[in-house]
Length: 205
Image (cartoon, rainbow, N blue to C red; front, top):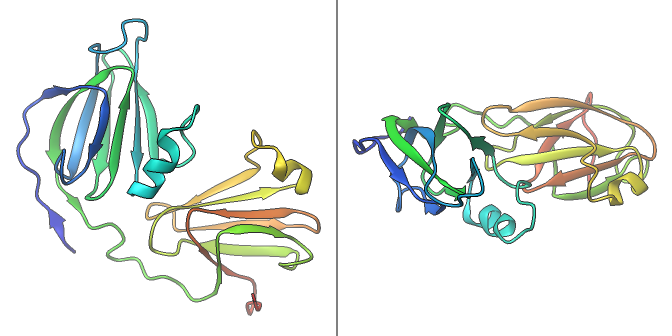
């Protein structure tokens, strides 16, 4: 396990903006508190943490961000939030700033995670009963970056951009899940492929 030692950073305010971890801020475990040093009409600071540059760039120009980050939330009042920031990630601070303090180290994520055997399901949409048989499946994290798995009732529901369906997030903190797929459902795999098993497995071409 590789540990990323943090530089001692006293409590200090940062402004709203984007920060690359490992360059603009060292990796580490940080505490965050609200600081009113930006938009005077907004009494909170929104924060988003992205696992890599591609997820950050996808989300940053959208009107309503929040589809890609592994961590998101708001800072208000005197409350304190603790967030682990890893090398290569992107931190986006919006509306106002934050008082941050590095209070610990982070280790390489997934150093003890073994990817299970099974069928690799690439990113995409799959109609149940046509591309994947109906049934109950175990789904597993691929060991790289976050996957978002969504199950929709049918193609109409899947085409509604405001409908998230039944959602499962697979990452280093949640490595597996179970989904039941019925005829006509649509399975959507986003970001990165997943591993899927059902009994003795099935063939996916």
